[in-house]
Image (cartoon, rainbow, N blue to C red; front, side, top):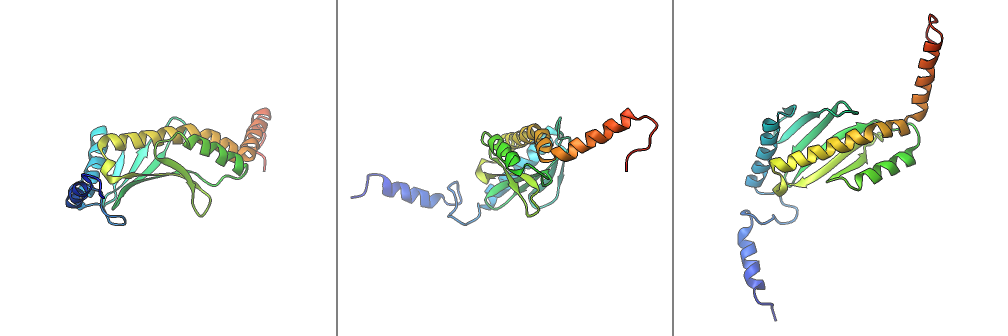
Length: 187
Protein backbone atom coordinates (compact mmCIF):
# COMPACT_ATOMS: atom_id res chain seq x y z
CA UNK A 1 0.00 0.00 0.00
CA UNK A 2 1.45 3.32 -1.06
CA UNK A 3 1.80 6.14 1.42
CA UNK A 4 -0.67 8.97 0.91
CA UNK A 5 0.80 11.76 -1.17
CA UNK A 6 3.78 9.79 -2.52
CA UNK A 7 2.30 9.39 -6.01
CA UNK A 8 1.27 13.03 -6.10
CA UNK A 9 4.78 14.06 -5.02
CA UNK A 10 6.36 11.90 -7.73
CA UNK A 11 4.06 13.38 -10.37
CA UNK A 12 4.91 16.93 -9.29
CA UNK A 13 8.63 16.12 -9.26
CA UNK A 14 8.47 14.67 -12.82
CA UNK A 15 6.78 17.84 -14.04
CA UNK A 16 9.50 19.99 -12.46
CA UNK A 17 12.46 18.63 -14.41
CA UNK A 18 14.06 21.64 -16.07
CA UNK A 19 11.95 24.01 -14.01
CA UNK A 20 13.67 23.71 -10.67
CA UNK A 21 14.16 20.03 -9.91
CA UNK A 22 17.67 18.63 -10.18
CA UNK A 23 18.37 16.92 -13.50
CA UNK A 24 18.60 13.19 -13.81
CA UNK A 25 21.95 11.76 -12.66
CA UNK A 26 24.65 12.26 -15.28
CA UNK A 27 22.71 14.94 -17.15
CA UNK A 28 23.75 18.59 -17.27
CA UNK A 29 21.79 21.29 -15.54
CA UNK A 30 19.36 23.17 -17.78
CA UNK A 31 20.88 26.07 -19.72
CA UNK A 32 18.93 28.56 -17.57
CA UNK A 33 20.68 27.23 -14.44
CA UNK A 34 24.08 27.34 -16.14
CA UNK A 35 23.42 30.90 -17.38
CA UNK A 36 22.33 32.02 -13.91
CA UNK A 37 25.57 30.63 -12.41
CA UNK A 38 27.70 32.37 -15.07
CA UNK A 39 25.80 35.58 -14.39
CA UNK A 40 26.34 35.26 -10.63
CA UNK A 41 30.11 34.88 -11.08
CA UNK A 42 30.34 37.79 -13.53
CA UNK A 43 28.15 39.96 -11.30
CA UNK A 44 30.26 39.28 -8.21
CA UNK A 45 33.55 39.97 -9.99
CA UNK A 46 32.27 43.23 -11.49
CA UNK A 47 30.51 44.54 -8.37
CA UNK A 48 33.43 43.77 -6.05
CA UNK A 49 36.11 44.96 -8.47
CA UNK A 50 38.02 41.69 -8.18
CA UNK A 51 40.95 41.45 -10.59
CA UNK A 52 39.77 38.84 -13.09
CA UNK A 53 40.09 37.92 -16.72
CA UNK A 54 37.20 36.25 -18.54
CA UNK A 55 38.75 33.45 -20.58
CA UNK A 56 35.53 32.44 -22.27
CA UNK A 57 32.68 30.01 -21.98
CA UNK A 58 32.01 30.38 -18.24
CA UNK A 59 35.69 30.50 -17.24
CA UNK A 60 37.62 33.18 -15.38
CA UNK A 61 41.14 33.61 -14.05
CA UNK A 62 40.95 35.58 -10.80
CA UNK A 63 43.89 37.21 -9.03
CA UNK A 64 43.76 37.49 -5.24
CA UNK A 65 46.37 39.16 -3.05
CA UNK A 66 47.05 37.67 0.35
CA UNK A 67 49.26 38.99 3.11
CA UNK A 68 51.66 36.02 3.14
CA UNK A 69 51.03 34.44 -0.27
CA UNK A 70 51.03 37.57 -2.33
CA UNK A 71 49.81 36.26 -5.68
CA UNK A 72 46.97 33.75 -5.60
CA UNK A 73 45.65 32.78 -9.02
CA UNK A 74 42.26 31.09 -9.11
CA UNK A 75 40.44 29.46 -12.00
CA UNK A 76 36.65 29.55 -11.79
CA UNK A 77 34.84 27.30 -14.25
CA UNK A 78 31.07 27.08 -14.57
CA UNK A 79 30.49 23.62 -15.98
CA UNK A 80 27.45 21.50 -16.75
CA UNK A 81 26.64 20.71 -13.11
CA UNK A 82 29.13 22.53 -10.85
CA UNK A 83 31.29 25.59 -10.51
CA UNK A 84 34.85 24.33 -10.14
CA UNK A 85 37.46 26.32 -8.24
CA UNK A 86 41.17 25.57 -8.65
CA UNK A 87 44.26 27.37 -7.36
CA UNK A 88 47.94 26.47 -7.43
CA UNK A 89 49.18 26.38 -3.83
CA UNK A 90 52.89 25.46 -4.00
CA UNK A 91 55.32 23.30 -5.91
CA UNK A 92 56.11 19.78 -4.76
CA UNK A 93 57.79 19.80 -1.36
CA UNK A 94 61.40 18.63 -1.11
CA UNK A 95 61.07 17.00 2.30
CA UNK A 96 58.83 16.21 5.28
CA UNK A 97 55.99 15.12 2.99
CA UNK A 98 54.03 13.23 5.64
CA UNK A 99 54.18 16.12 8.11
CA UNK A 100 53.19 18.67 5.47
CA UNK A 101 50.27 16.59 4.16
CA UNK A 102 49.12 15.95 7.73
CA UNK A 103 49.13 19.68 8.48
CA UNK A 104 47.26 20.50 5.28
CA UNK A 105 44.65 17.80 5.89
CA UNK A 106 44.01 19.23 9.34
CA UNK A 107 43.65 22.74 7.89
CA UNK A 108 41.21 21.64 5.22
CA UNK A 109 38.98 19.85 7.73
CA UNK A 110 37.30 23.13 8.63
CA UNK A 111 37.41 24.54 5.10
CA UNK A 112 34.29 25.36 3.16
CA UNK A 113 34.22 23.21 -0.04
CA UNK A 114 38.00 23.39 -0.58
CA UNK A 115 40.43 20.49 -0.50
CA UNK A 116 44.16 20.12 -1.06
CA UNK A 117 45.22 17.82 -3.86
CA UNK A 118 48.31 16.86 -5.84
CA UNK A 119 48.89 16.88 -9.58
CA UNK A 120 51.03 14.40 -11.51
CA UNK A 121 54.18 16.35 -10.50
CA UNK A 122 53.19 16.33 -6.81
CA UNK A 123 52.57 20.10 -6.88
CA UNK A 124 49.85 21.12 -4.44
CA UNK A 125 46.55 22.73 -5.43
CA UNK A 126 43.39 23.84 -3.70
CA UNK A 127 40.24 22.64 -5.45
CA UNK A 128 36.53 22.72 -4.78
CA UNK A 129 33.13 22.34 -6.41
CA UNK A 130 29.81 24.03 -5.79
CA UNK A 131 26.55 22.79 -7.34
CA UNK A 132 25.39 25.26 -10.00
CA UNK A 133 22.06 25.77 -8.24
CA UNK A 134 23.95 27.12 -5.21
CA UNK A 135 26.05 29.63 -7.19
CA UNK A 136 25.08 33.19 -6.28
CA UNK A 137 27.24 36.30 -5.94
CA UNK A 138 27.30 35.67 -2.16
CA UNK A 139 28.40 32.07 -2.72
CA UNK A 140 31.22 33.14 -5.06
CA UNK A 141 32.31 35.63 -2.38
CA UNK A 142 32.21 32.90 0.28
CA UNK A 143 34.25 30.45 -1.83
CA UNK A 144 36.90 32.99 -2.87
CA UNK A 145 37.13 34.34 0.69
CA UNK A 146 37.60 30.82 2.03
CA UNK A 147 40.27 30.12 -0.58
CA UNK A 148 42.11 33.34 0.22
CA UNK A 149 42.01 32.63 3.95
CA UNK A 150 43.13 29.00 3.60
CA UNK A 151 45.89 29.63 1.02
CA UNK A 152 47.23 32.71 2.79
CA UNK A 153 47.21 31.13 6.25
CA UNK A 154 48.73 27.81 5.20
CA UNK A 155 51.35 29.04 2.76
CA UNK A 156 54.32 30.09 4.92
CA UNK A 157 54.06 27.18 7.38
CA UNK A 158 53.85 24.80 4.40
CA UNK A 159 56.91 26.29 2.68
CA UNK A 160 58.83 26.20 5.97
CA UNK A 161 57.97 22.52 6.39
CA UNK A 162 58.40 21.35 2.80
CA UNK A 163 61.60 23.29 2.12
CA UNK A 164 63.23 23.47 5.57
CA UNK A 165 66.70 22.43 4.38
CA UNK A 166 66.72 24.86 1.45
CA UNK A 167 65.56 27.69 3.69
CA UNK A 168 68.24 26.86 6.28
CA UNK A 169 70.92 26.82 3.56
CA UNK A 170 69.71 30.18 2.23
CA UNK A 171 69.77 31.71 5.71
CA UNK A 172 73.29 30.38 6.34
CA UNK A 173 74.46 31.79 3.01
CA UNK A 174 72.97 35.21 3.84
CA UNK A 175 74.50 35.12 7.32
CA UNK A 176 77.92 34.48 5.80
CA UNK A 177 77.45 37.43 3.46
CA UNK A 178 76.64 39.82 6.28
CA UNK A 179 79.36 38.41 8.56
CA UNK A 180 82.08 38.91 5.94
CA UNK A 181 81.52 42.33 4.35
CA UNK A 182 83.50 42.94 1.21
CA UNK A 183 83.94 39.23 0.46
CA UNK A 184 82.52 37.82 -2.77
CA UNK A 185 79.45 35.60 -2.37
CA UNK A 186 80.20 31.92 -1.93
CA UNK A 187 80.24 29.54 -4.88
